[in-house]
Length: 109
Length: 117
Figure 1 (cartoon, helix red, strand yellow):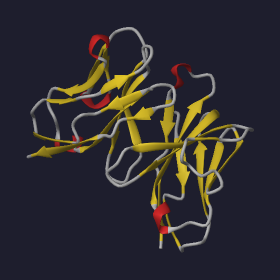
Figure 2 (tube, rainbow over the protein chains, first blue to last red; figure 1 turned 90 degrees about the horizontal axis):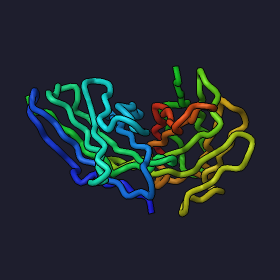
Figure 3 (cartoon, rainbow over the protein chains, first blue to last red; figure 1 turned 180 degrees about the vertical axis):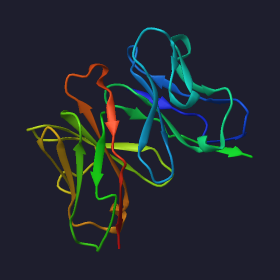
């Protein structure tokens, strides 16, 4: 069965520090992979997506993600976090957009 | 481009009444629209997939008579929560897949907050 796991429910980082949010998936073939961000009470904004090709994907707001087939992972990274990055982050997989449980990011001043 | 709107953004209703939520693709034609439900501090749960002009496909455990979905045109899908009860209170989000766009990307609406008293 297709599934996606975000192992970290909540992460706190200091402003300016680097960030990595983990996403692991279970899928029969190379999946479509997405990262979305959701601010409180808001809808979802697409940060980046991977369909094929270069495994390192650049997104908006300085985010990037790397598809690693051997690890079934698609981790989201940002070299320097800003206070405005505090939000909920969702990894999603597949044609039918199965979502992970989400990771809540808190940014300390 | 690829903007999806939802109306209303929030609604409060009495128990037993029905509520209709609209999802519109503003600048593209959407052959497929999806409805999600999100509980507080939880992930999105896919409720149903609707294709224009045909019946919606509901996920296991979602009552189709409770959550009526209509996708009457290529730019509009509606979700009607019938005989709403407090346990139906949630954040409902729709998304739309653009006709002809590759890779099945979905575009999400801003969500509708439903509170049933």
